[in-house]
Image 1: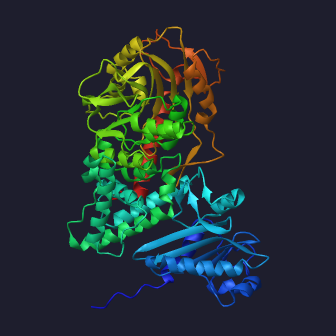
Image 2 (image 1 turned 30 degrees about the horizontal axis):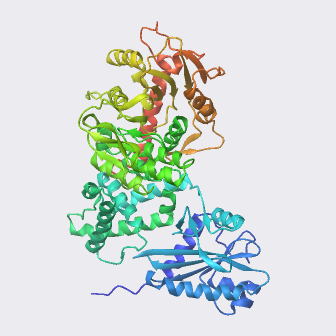
Image 3 (image 1 turned 135 degrees about the vertical axis):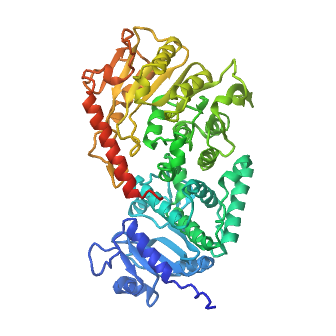
Length: 621
């Protein structure tokens, strides 16, 4: 049997160049191309000033950040050789920094190979020494983009605080990871759980030995998952996240490669830093894995886009004194958005109390509930109040813990419900389902205190259909008030063909016939379809953004003056003489209702888009 060849630095050379190119650096030689930014080995000595001080030393790469600022990158063939790479970098920097023209402000060690992945450590010169570069307080695990080096240089701070991350890059990586897991023979149903396990693995500063055998690697990852979940008091989810070895031995190596390659992609995204940002990036991954899974569709699971969860949290003005509940929490998107909104205004003590005592969620699918738990663990909320089960069999009762108002799950309806705010996206009911969307809203209202505020996303027909839906709308208004209804873009859940609306409800106050409701028709959200995704486009109108401030003010005070904007917004009382009680903006704004032909045309377009997407994506993935 031919032994495996010893790893060389060639893998690292290729990795560095490909990664620098991917994140926006011009990898051409600056001595040959004026726009070039990257010297590679011998090219480093083509610059007379660099050669003068390095003599014959040749680091793997030198990035020319500006006319006087350099970034030195040194590679080694194994992760265990990182210390040697850092020692070499120190030597290079001491020599170059004697120059009056150049200063080596950044240093990066890259150690590893394709078999065990690559480790990256980056440092910035500050106060007489090199400090680790951090993003949102977490050491960077990837090479820096031009924008990141610019931010660090302008602030003269090695920690990029409140860092934003590129949605387009994340979605691209999510699709790439989905393909990696597909090639690794990992069942579509299991991909989100595998991702959750790998994400938890990245929480540990010590990395698993990716050069070990498949079975040893999987045991190591599972052990890390078990330790973290047990420590966070969530041991019941261990078996929902653990990675299962393929039954066929031939697939063991395929799975191992998929795990190694996926971890590399996560490290390249600075995933721990990203998870501490104000966006639900975990949801972005889950959306790719779950969106077209037949089992997810059977459960009525439609993940809420992240810009909508943030939008709702801001309108609802979630604060540290609220008790927030999502009885259909999915992967935790609304809970994450609520937590991150509180984080913007609360001090550390208030935020700690909120995440420990005030966030509650239930998810019917135990695997998806496990994903929500992981989502909150990354936000420092491992001991959260998220559980799997049927929300209709779980009720919330008030309790006080350490002199803080909180809640607990109970098996009977409370006479003293504690919830102040609900944000939810109920499963879109199927034809054969008796769990209509409105039943989730009725249940949630019963868990709320008098005057509580609820936001829900509903399929458009729930607000216009006769029969049981009409009966529900009438009953709802007998005990509660509708404050606003917002029609969302027709392709909000693209490629799932469902038109939706957001509804804001005040608990326990019957709808006065004269009370105005803010009707908004937000058909544009600043996103456009591009390469099977919906991505932000600065040239696209954004009705949600344009109406957000007026909506937030109106939710607080329904007497707030609202300008009438044809086809967009108007404050107007509900027409109780409408025999169908159609509670949609199109019934109240200064514009005609769409014709049957227009509705049919719109649905045909949605179906064509969905079919085209599924064909392009590959039905077998």
